[in-house]
Image 1 (cartoon, rainbow, N blue to C red):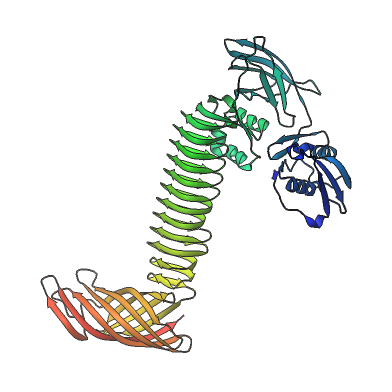
Image 2 (image 1 turned 60 degrees about the vertical axis):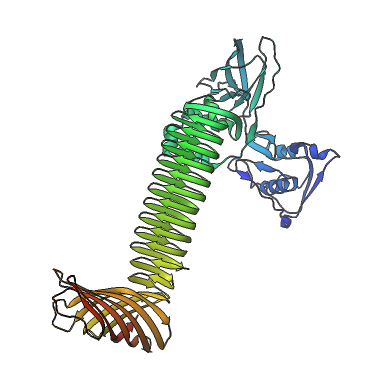
Length: 589
């Protein structure tokens, strides 16, 4: 576990003096001199945090192995950082220094090597035996690799190995690694003449990350990542090599051998699939790409991509993309995209997009899900956010756990607070001024049930529900006249022009359809203006003028009344415009 605190704990009363010579800035960090005086009991964790913050580097260690919460042994210390670590932790720990880091590694055992080398036709063959330096017993599943060529292998169950690879005549440095053993490097000199050569190989130290274990333990990880590659990662740990190119047939058959999982490449081609440490350039696979760390620039796979770190740039998977950290750029999945971190940019999924944290823009054939949607979600069926959202647009439903700017769907919208509008058959919110739907359940709005009558002798039982500005209208109507179509359904929208506790003024646009449900259908469109007066908390009377336009079936009884403005009869129907008055009583809930 990497500890990166940079805050000085003044309350600890810890006083550190850095004693540097004139060239002290070029000293190795383990050789830097410090003096420690404490007036209160301090833990090793607190001392390491302060040392790292004052010296501009980080300690990297496994918290489960290091006695971090133990009190330091002495009240005063004067010496180097390396001597202090040895005093507090003992010789069962190994201390390494890399740019910006001091690595503390539990390594109570040491490795030893018995090997012989044969060089023929620029091919090096190393056969050997790796043993425990203390017990002389063979060590199984230990990693052996050449840092210059990245050739690597593992010992068998008895500790024997054979490593064969192409290399120009030169000296060979073999590194041995095994969990709980100290890393050991051996120099092997071939019998042929030594040719000096420059090696441009670069190495990196990247602190351990729990997402690597999650990736390897997933179903696809267990299926395609071999046991030997897992052991290689455990043995070599956080050390990675850079390579301009790698090529794989499968994760176990690649140009870098088993060291592929510890290699960061600029160009990667996987005929079936590959498992690499990361990509900084371009990667393509016939079936799948699996990356232990980050992917930058462009990645394509015929079936799926899995990235243990973050993806930056363009990622395209024929069926599935999975990223364990963040995505910055464009992610396209034929079926499903899943990001455990955040998505900055655009995510397109044929069926489902899922982001565990924040997402900018999501487009899915069926469902989008994000903890928070910063800008826009478009889905064929449903959108869902646990927190806030920008604009949600779905075929059936939208759900936002907190605040949303706008929601548009075919059936239902739900949010805690709506800053803009909701458009659906059913809208649900605690706060919303602009609910555009037939049924609106808005806590800070109003729901009322009214009984009224209009100029055409239609009685109306109407439910009005909505926010403080716009509300929906849904009701039934029954004609008191003896006509062929006495029953009707009405729906529409209304606006609270002057909302008030006593006096109010509403305007409504309503469509009434009356039918015998067999052959005859008549329609009346009405624009109404309703002044109202409220009695107490739950009653309001209203009455006001209306302007109506009717389309009636020819040959049927005239179902309209009021003041005739315009009328025209054709073979297809009767078209009539008329004025009227509607009034009634509302019960407010």
